[in-house]
Length: 128
Image (cartoon, rainbow, N blue to C red):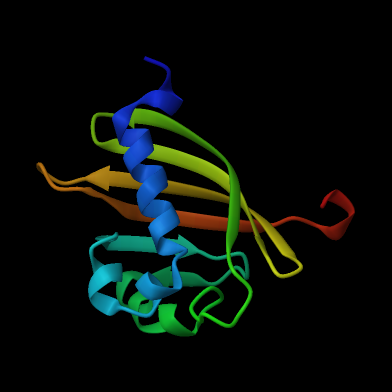
């Protein structure tokens, strides 16, 4: 089965898209379900985020308000690295900012995939 058609890739993409929903970003309980307790991120700004830092900051970050610019995500590609471990890549546009993104989703026992690691890299204007 091609990686992009694997059920775990489909699940990871759906859960990644859920993280872009303002309703999820504003709800700690909904967001907690999507993040692995060992989550870390290196954001497009270069800042390193932990699980607790991200959950606390998520409502105020881009995409957290119904009135702000939406997160537009495209070009998803996924690979199953091992059972219960999915690597996603995609691009986002938020207002005028464009970034290439990479996420690792992992499954503990029989639960859902949860975001274990995320990195965003800004795309220079000349390449946008």
